[in-house]
Length: 184
Image (tube, rainbow, N blue to C red; front, side, top):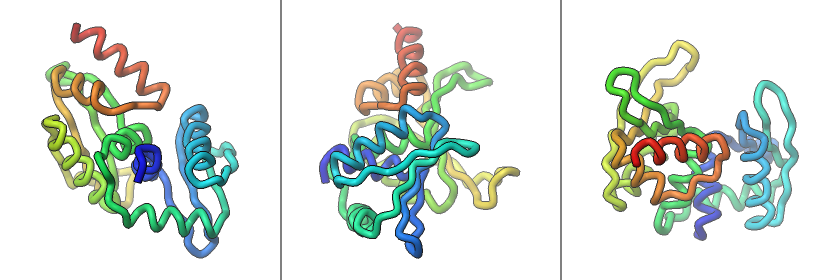
């Protein structure tokens, strides 16, 4: 599995497959990021999706071949994991300053169905010596399933995260730039 396929697999943290209709979906507030995902689908699988807008942008593609290829990809082992963590962060991550301690926090959130993705991401972080914590389950008043958070705390760990993983989401890149300029 190449790094771009790993990235798509991680980005699928904000997506799902409708096996009955043979359709693949990615959801995101940022159109520019979804266009990048669509380019990666085209480059790696030769298939272009269609992006539409509802509450958020939705990239969808009805293709039995794509669904089958993606299901095979989900069963493969990731190689170094950098692409996977970057894709998962870009789809479901955030960076912010803790309200209590004012230290930076990298946070990737998944419902219980995505817990295995968070565990895999934590293994990759451990491999690159980035200290992280898997927290949860938490019940969210807006969600049906319990949520889990994979968090990286502190300037040094967050900076290592920024330098290790190739983040592509434009909004998150801005936040990372602001973080690294503050930490000196």
